[in-house]
Image 1: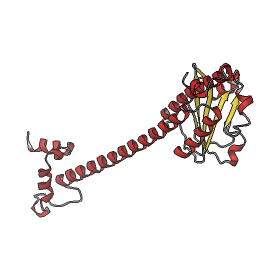
Image 2 (image 1 turned 180 degrees about the horizontal axis):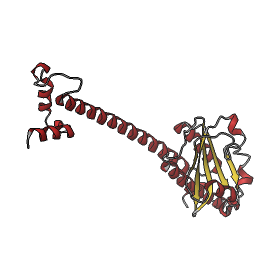
Image 3 (image 1 turned 90 degrees about the vertical axis):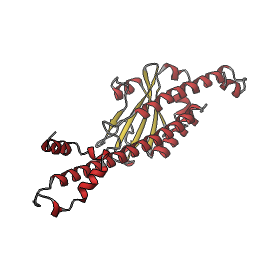
Image 4 (image 1 turned 180 degrees about the vertical axis):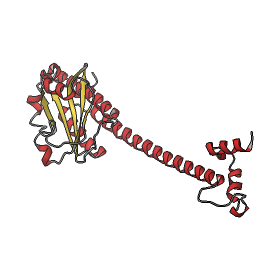
Length: 254
């Protein structure tokens, strides 16, 4: 390997000095007056190498800091999600679960507006007369829609829908979106037996809080747990209606 090849190699592979820091130290210690090439408007080869190594280190440092921040944020999200899942899965009353879910999302994710929708003509909901029993009790937190509306929202894709900028009206939050200053929204389907049986609607007062490309896995997972929680609650509800004399603790363990 001749001198030119060595120079080209070092120029293209500054990470070489990560393994030989003492060599880099020697290069940095060379006084300019001892250099055979006079100072010009362009950096010397040694200067270019030093600058490249420095830039690469700064780039790696910023990438590492970014990675640490992302990891920390993901850990917080999963911690919040775990607590919400634990909360809703231990609930035995629909009204209690909806209130706790709404409060937990608002507090833990700093999302000011949360609505839960259930499809009122879904067979497993109709038999419990949920709309008749809870629409007034949970007004503002729980609403009922028909299957046509639910299918229209998700267009048969069974995936969250995100609106980054709401300019005219919100189909989800209705006429109140303007007074609440909702600027972006996310609608997460609640899926039961392969069909949409409801949705979680989240409204933010900041544009692009929800936007295309946003990862929604944790929201989808929360919706999955919510579907399980609702089924559990309806099972307990059915047992209460069929066996009113059985103590609640025995029904819960059934």
